[in-house]
Image (cartoon, rainbow, N blue to C red; front, side, top):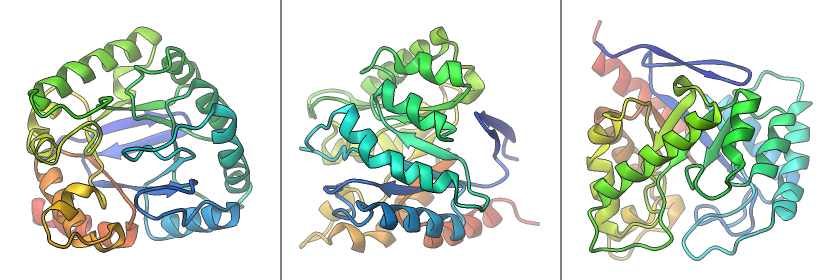
Length: 280
């Protein structure tokens, strides 16, 4: 029997354990690895978010800066210029929407996004890049997704040990700032500062990550390690079967939430998986 536990966030509570939660990705960027700017324009981003909600997303993760390998960093001002019109339109969409997660490591962006309705702060640097973002999250009562990351991949290190130590520090930063433990989610950061082999090792080590005592989010959708298994590598939009396979493995290894680009397909796959794990 799987553990049922609530996940409070700024505007409500998500139920963990009853079924696998699906987070839909909306990249308001011109250079995302996965879609190459599909949602860069405001109307496209809003339409994409509404479509993912209709497909069954439990959370919408909206970001204004690409964090793919080799990405060009953008200022908080540029990031907000991309995000604000999208969040404003969603706030006045006139229909119920799932909780919004803001994908940023910048405190000013997180603060502004929360003011426009975001309930979760998803930080790809696990609160270890901007010293103010943990306090912003705590003050607002938002939930926090803390991801493992490195400036560069190092094939010589034990990536699992590094991931666990990094995320233990992230949790300590979050709780010292006042984020309650029941509002913290951990993410192994697949593809971030990891070699191909280390990304596979990080997914395989999800039971150890879960052993830290927090819910786990897995984001393997369309990642490069999937393409590396084939010759020639399929482009990101053609990696759906591999994405589902990785996420099914991850859920069986302890993941509670999957972060995906293809929501409808993952909702169906996760519902079948959940039913098989809990036969009548």
